[in-house]
Image 1 (cartoon, one colour):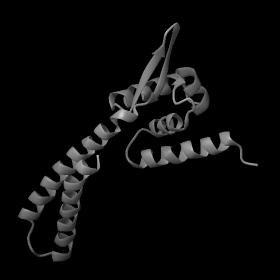
Image 2 (cartoon, one colour):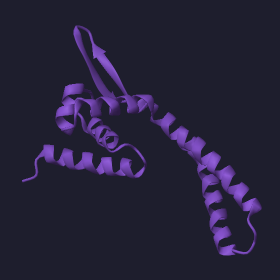
Image 3 (cartoon, one colour):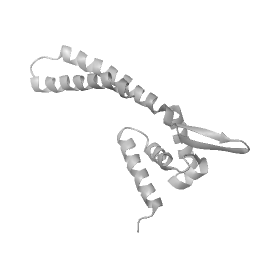
Image 4 (tube, one colour):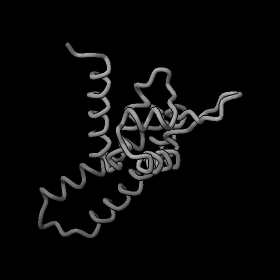
Length: 146
């Protein structure tokens, strides 16, 4: 029988893999996954350490990284000295917006490359042109989606 906890752990690992492939530190994706699945949607430092079975220093560094990225923040409650970490769901549009800036910069670079490449490799050049078109589509459409 698959327990709810094992389903949560499996999903946390899946999210961790996606984030790892996108260049995040390995623990960052797992931590984000845990906070996505957390009920209530905020957890103490010790709860995070216990669930992820990671060292306190690794979790601390990962929380600092995710806070700097505006992906995680914390709340406090009156009379309770603990900080409760949560996904900063309000900032995810901003996070996607940062990706948009990357796409804009890459599109400029690809267009510059196309301007100086010879016509000796038309198939490859056409591939680069298609990348530039894809970037332009994202640049045009992503702000409306956000």
